[in-house]
Length: 269
Image 1 (cartoon, helix red, strand yellow):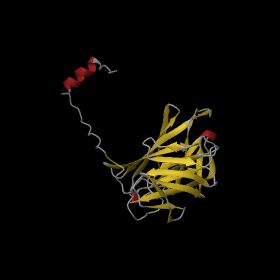
Image 2 (cartoon, helix red, strand yellow):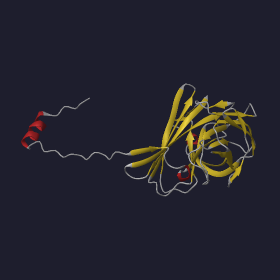
Image 3 (spheres, one colour):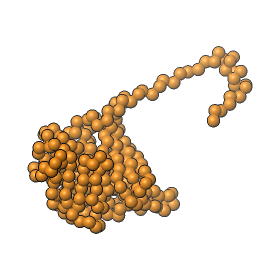
Image 4 (tube, one colour):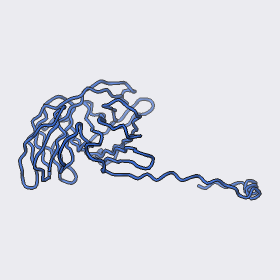
């Protein structure tokens, strides 16, 4: 609703010659979406938590040139779109990790948690200058059974059918620079335990070779060609990192834990 100006104020403005000062408009920010070369991107991944109540956001290999880092995370819980955003206070020690609550907590500490988790989108905004921002966008799937991406290009069928807590995602960036040209986004399977990750991963791509990150370097990995897809028989012990997060569901208590993953898998032209 527009506020009315008092008549006396209007009269005063007329007598003063209606002198006003112009406020310079904010500079327009140019957003470059997924244009940053993969080897120059930070490695951004998300990991499930044993509680099922939160995710662990993981950022590494962050170039010093960036002036700001902001994260938007959205996910589908049943038919409801949920999410939130956070900013990383730079400079920061790497790898940087942060807990992301899958639900909400009141000021009194009472929390409710989302269920029927399906998929989500991660958006990382990297401020380079006042007028230039790199935006990285990627998707992920919560895994508790066989899953397929919305575009049908990725499917993952775990060997186990019960008690699975995994996240299948195309990662933003890679943990270590590589040589070659990608034909598909880097794919990682993150887990909440050190158990072997076993199953069948199918990707629609014309890649001729593939590499997999083992926690320190890349090594070759074989696959089968089936129609227009490549199929991996995954049977891998995940690499792990020890990290620390803050538990919003436990009134800000700190927790030390390990995150686990197979990959990223790189599909090379």
